Length: 142
Image 1 (tube, rainbow, N blue to C red):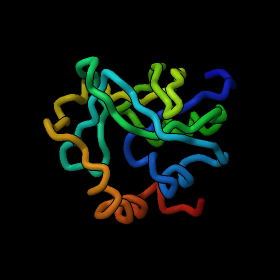
Image 2: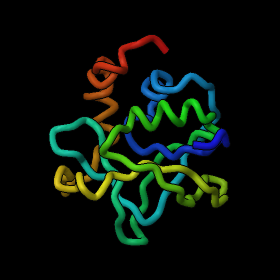
Image 3: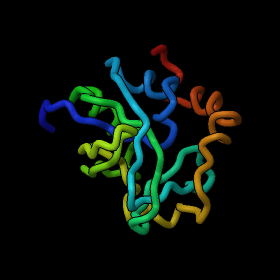
Image 4: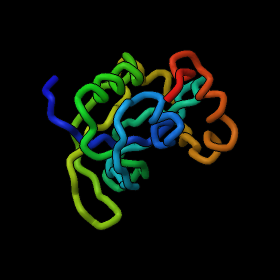
């Protein structure tokens, strides 16, 4: 891995500052953004989603963190684990700018775990976020 800061697109638990701040050390600016050509799906019996390729007109709303340091990229890779691979994509910011970001995609060998339902952001925030924060590996101080 090189030491170049990268923009990271998040679409699941990492969109929430409470989760993000427990994984990374740096303080980053962020904004909402939209990624086309992908779908956010529920992972069977998990609180987190998977991002999978979809039709070009499919759009996933998420959050971009800007200029994330290499050491925090390593922490994010570890947090995402073996089910995900990082890939470079382009997306649209609220200002209409296309930017290059890193995004975590669900690996093909794990696709059997995907449900055919959209991951519900509001349900996660209202019902699962606190439980998610108390899982092993996330219960450290920010």
